[in-house]
Amino acid sequence: MGFIILLAVIVLGAIGAVVSYNRFVSQKTLIKDAWANIDTELRRRYDLIPNLVETVKGYASHEKEVLENVTRARAMAASATGSPAEQAAAEGPLVAALRQLMLVVENYPDLKANQGFLQLQGELTNTEDRLQTARRFYNANVRDFNRRVKQFPSMIVASLFNFKEEEFFEVEDAIREGGPPQVSFGTPAGSGAPLAGGPPVVAAADPPVAPPPPADDVPEPPNQPTPPAPA
Image 1 (cartoon, rainbow, N blue to C red):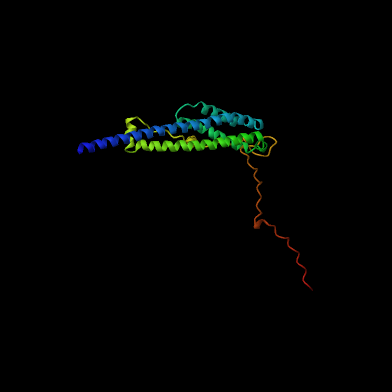
Image 2: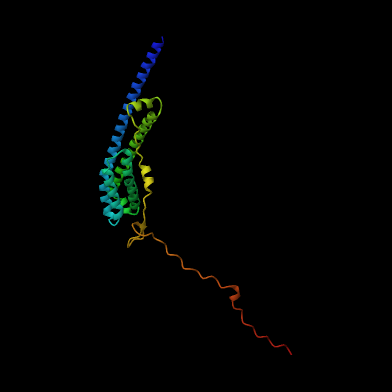
């Protein structure tokens, strides 16, 4: 009887290990597919940015530093080939540069009304929405996978078959670590609206108003002559 019980425990343990292993494999596949979706949306965004920069340049060519920041950050992010955490670190400066560019665009009404720009902006917004959806799906699968790697009894299977914790893809964390984008606004010649790239516009102060003279300084009226007394 004892042998049968021991055999049953071994069989049940083996079945549980196989089920746990298969689930780990399925989760790894889900994580891989979810990352492929993120990569697809990232590549689509990289393809949109050059056209966006060229469109903005047609209306704001003197915003050289802002445009160069976007181009440089895009090149760095597109060439990143590391882990999800390393890719997120490369995406952080690009997202910050794009936000800075959109702040600058607010100062150009003609650019904001341009149909080409509006179309690119819409495509970029849709891409960002799909990217956020893919990111949430990826991170949810990573969170569930990592939980099983650390919990008993699935941690035994993870240790036996060398399943390691996966990395999250968190771009906002990379932005916070790098600090917020710095944008300055100035006024170009012939324009009364503040634009990026120049010193801040400070309104001229009103001239000081002289205080009223003290009461002691007010001159007294001259003495009137005393009329002669009647005879």
